[in-house]
Amino acid sequence: MLSLVIPVYRNEASLPDLLAALQEMARALPEPLEVVFVVDGSPDRCYDILRERLPSSGLTSTLVLLTRNFGAFAAQPALRHDIQKNADRRDGVVHGLKQVRRS
Image (cartoon, rainbow, N blue to C red; front, side, top):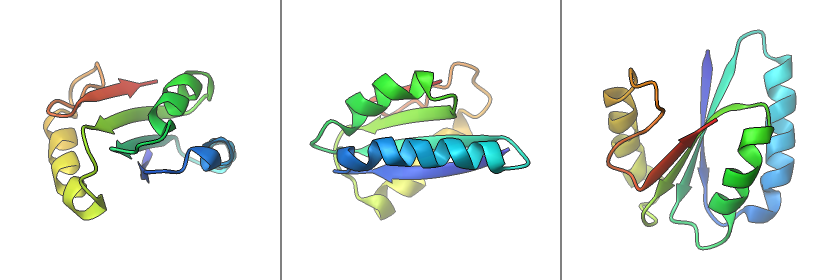
């Protein structure tokens, strides 16, 4: 399985195109694709849009909402640690973060 982590901040307008491109990519890859969307305290509707559209997208995905904007470099180590610590959990929950949704 290939995993792709995508930071999301102030780009609600581009999310439909991104999801379409990811769906095409997933179909074209020889192995399964998992996409982790990390909404880094974005002030727009990015989280709401992804929460609405991911379940019907056909993508294997995890949606992470950080409680505030930590910035890409500050957020990455904490996210990696929490994902590794909870990798064996079947519920898709990454503890220590505000909310996570897996579809």
